[in-house]
View 1: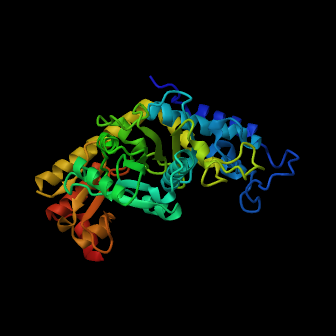
View 2: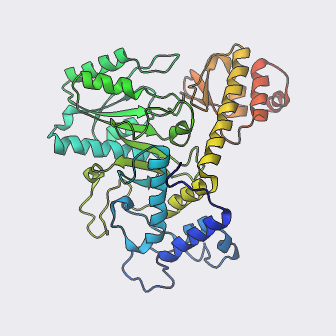
View 3: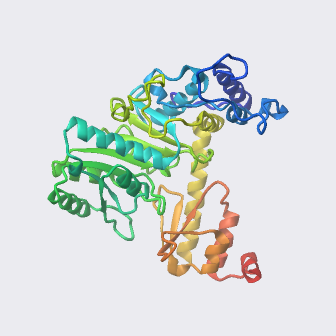
Length: 420
C-alpha cells in the first residue's frame, strides 16, 4: 500500500493544479512590489490564450512560479505556496513510496537534473566532513566506480576534491571487493581519511548497479568515515520497480541520499532532477547570506521553475503506482525479448537483469547501423560499446528492424542505408 502516491483522473489533476496556482500570487491581480520576478512576457506568451484553461502545465509555465529554496524544511517564499505544496508531494512520493523512507525523515527538492543533484550531495558531504570532523580538504576524497557518470568528475573539479575510481569487472561491470579494497588502500596511502562515496543505481552507459554492501563492508573494514550517496539519475524511476531492487533504499541505514532524474524514465521536461537526503544533513549546504529569501536557500541552483515540479506531480498522479509498475514490467519484457534475439545471433552484449539498457560490443555494429538507429557509443572517438535504451516508444517492431540488420537480413533499413 502506497502512502502518498495516488492515481488521479484527468479532471482531478487539472483541478488540483489550478487550485495550487490560485494559492500563488497573481502578478496581475495583486499589488506585489518587492519581488524581482513576474509572469512570462505577455507580448510573447499571452495569459489570455483560450487553450490555457485546459492546460495546467502550460498555465504554470506562463504564471512562472519560482521555487527557490527547500520546501521540506518548513518556511519558504509565501508567494508560491500553492505549487510548492505539489513539489513537497513529489518528494513524499519519491522518498516514501519509491525509496522506502519513513515519513518525515528526509529533505529534498526538484533540481535542474541529475548532475546538479549529484553535486548537491557531494557538496553537502564535503562540508559535513570539513565542519563536523574538522577534516582538511586534502583528506577528503570522492570514491566511485569507473562506470560512474561524468558529473563525478565535474563535482571533483567544482568542489576541489580528488576523485578515486574503482575498476569494474569487464563483462559483469561489477565492483569486486578486492578492487574496492585496493582503491581505498591507495587513497589512504595518499593521506585520504574521509570518503564521499557514490554508488550507481543503473549507470548511464550500461545500466549496471553497484553493490552497496560490498562498498560499505570494505569501507568499514578499513575504518573509513564515509557518507554514501546513490546516483539513481537513470534508475530511480525504473530499478525500484523490478524484482532486482533490494538494498538501494532508505531502509538501508548506510545510505544518506539519492539522485533521481524525472526527465529520463518519467518523461518530464528536460531540466528536472530530484534530490532527497536524510533529515539533519541538508543544512550543511545552507547559504545564510541569502537572508532576503524567506527560509534562506539550501540548494545549489537557487531560483528554479516550479513548473518542472508540477509536471512530475502530474505524471505520477496520472499513472499511479500500479500503472507505473505495469509500465516497467512491459519494458522489462521487451528488454528480455531483445536479449534473446541477440543471444540467438551470437552477439555479445551486457544487460543487468533489472535494467532496460542493453549494451552491445562495437565489433558487432556497422557504422551505418549506428547512424540509422541512433545507437550511442561509450566513447565517440574510439567506441567499445553501443547501447540500446528500451523506452516506451521503443517497440518490438522497432527492435525487430535492428535485429534484422544485425542478422544481415534485407529489410527496409537496408533500403534507407542504400539511399544515404
